[in-house]
Image (cartoon, rainbow, N blue to C red; front, side):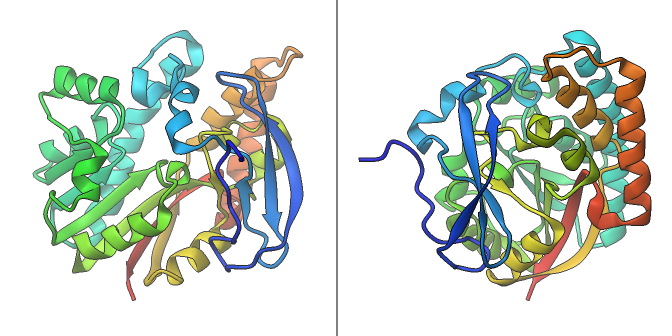
Length: 298
């Protein structure tokens, strides 16, 4: 009996023939080697030997998993907190421009910075978070009580949301069909679903190869590109409305990726690589380190 998560059909196109893509260690916690496979038909990539859902918990047990720990340890994570403030303003402007109302459900709300920011802008926010530690941080920092995933999965959080957001969360989700059914159920007819995802076809992914931080095996199950997430969502009744780069992600990814290498990397060299990745994305959005996609019901 296999003790890892079985993927028999491609989530994007449904085909069953896969090829080896690359081996990526869990740099953050266990240093175990995980295998990425690629669909022979559509090119979608996934972690083929991820732990079962019941066994994944220990792989998140690290102070460096910033959304659950809120750590400010070291230069990288100190800068992360500064960058997060800038990105909250950036996300808000993009969301405000959609003009679809202010009832928002954030799935994977972490320690609560995003929902607190939107709440202070007049939005009616509801948060869902799997980590008890992160839920407590949200309460301690902002006085906001968030919900366990079971509340969302059991359909007890209501419907007619104008916005459902998942910021670097959906790549962790095992039961993707169930989640998309719930998105359809919970969104208003004019609502928008926002998924922020790493792009494994980005320039920085190619520069750092198996050291690329956003592979993040085994916590990341699915490794999307702009093309494959659009196909994936369309197959489940959602069509792409807009997409935007997350402009600071190549800098964060470069710093974390460089830290995974055994050889010393001079910080200015790391920043030059990040700047190059950012520059390429200005000319080709689909080469961005991460993007957030705005979907509407078909």
